[in-house]
Length: 146
Image (cartoon, rainbow, N blue to C red; front, side, top):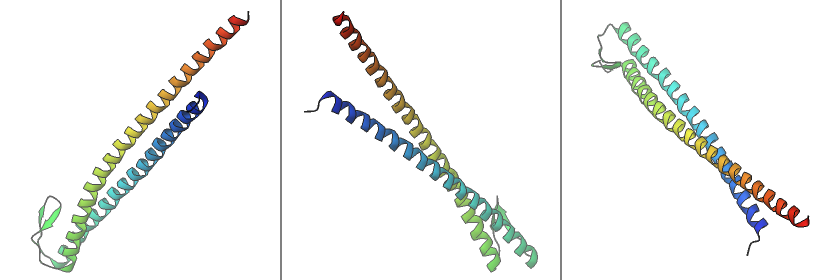
């Protein structure tokens, strides 16, 4: 069976590993959040490039293109217009998924930080209780010796 010191060491080591785990997961979530926002920026670049590609090619060919919001529709199958449509649609997809992933990872990081704060609070309260218990023991020992 464990004596009290081995048990306290085991609990302290376990609490330390939980704190380290939460800290590592928060850092990983921060990295994933940054990657998601970079995906959003790449999507913005592709989207603008696709719209500009479609505008330049249709102006050069003198064709009329119908637009639904920012997506070109109703044009001839000119390679430049198809490339512009592909860039625009992939840019929109990256923008949407980048924002969704960024908000998800931001919320995950907040949750890990909150749990890390709770773990620190519980560790501090356990430390205060141990100090109080030790002080009571020392007072009882000192009162017995007098």
